[in-house]
Length: 331
View 1 (spheres, rainbow, N blue to C red):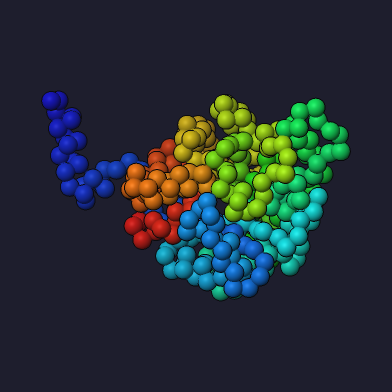
View 2 (view 1 turned 180 degrees about the vertical axis):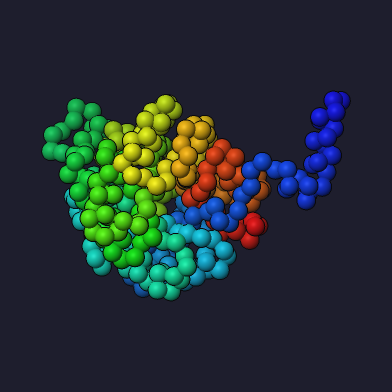
């Protein structure tokens, strides 16, 4: 056996030394916990496809955030489930919308917690797509015609409404062209120059989102989102998408999903000096949970390993439904 291998074996023998020489480290400060806000009072409905995750009314979200902060987690990201939906998703920018109410309540009760908001229209539109639809019928019903530029104005209104309610950061997830620049301009014009944008810069048209669509009640009523989300076969495109968002004023670039796209996270890490986020999405979470329930895997250890791999690939921040579960196990 070669001497270098012997040296590594010696280093791995003790946990303290192993930790010292580990190349990637996972910490509570790396994690962002997603929450789903719904109308009502005292509501906490478990999501069938995502055991341990809930649709919660504002009062219950506040209690959840107190627990999150107590665990040493730094941030949450909010997704809204409105009372009503319409063609344009107008409840996304209502002053008294569920997300806007939740932001204010959380910042009052847990001011130290960073509150990030998802900025998209799919949860708010009656058709479940991320923008305003065109009138022209497509030959292929999957080729949904979203009107890019009119959608941008609605996204900007939603982002500004979140900032007015007290959001610390906004995260556009729609994948419309030019939305980061429009949102940045709208925030600046309304006096929110210090509110950063975490852009879903590289978001694939993935099958791993299934459980989330149950959680956020935002499954498309027809067609799919492949006309505005990225082709899973493309990696070089990720560089182009990320570069555009960086030029338009994004402060953090996100890759979504996480584990199936470790190579893409690494590509962004190698080409951008700005912070990189990864979203360990609902499908990743649900698969690990289901396998653990069946006794096929140790779900806790698999969760920790998968999160560590996202860090190793180059993610600075990780959005994960495991955040509360793994927090007590992390420094």
